[in-house]
Image 1 (cartoon, rainbow, N blue to C red):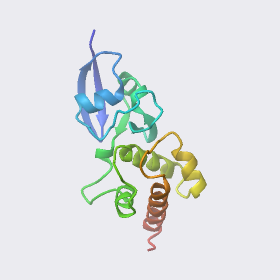
Image 2 (image 1 turned 135 degrees about the vertical axis):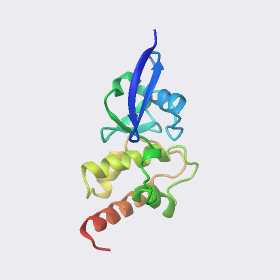
Image 3 (image 1 turned 135 degrees about the horizontal axis):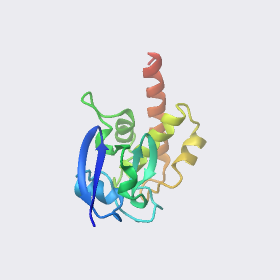
Length: 162
């Protein structure tokens, strides 16, 4: 029996009719069209499907879509604004933290959650925070560097310093 699910994704309201066993990752990709949500392992091990639920990083491949009712969902598509890319997105480009790109949306959203929780994490805290998000291409050095650059840029923007 199908259930009607009202979702708020990237600030927009959606209503979908789904089977109750559908995961949030599937609904976001197949029903809402947010293809930046990547489905890889379907077991919560790789983090490619990471989205933000009320600002917290969640692996959407192991969350039932119905659990997202009444919550704010942010995907990589919702991170940029009319002014341009989010500082994390730009830092990933500028510092070559993207190779095949499959893990990138999940990495960026996980990094945003890390920086939202702690605006001044150390390199070690960033690395620890990223555990659970896997990349098979980069070796993480460029990813961590990009996050540290974005961290510094975001701090400078808040204080008005360059």
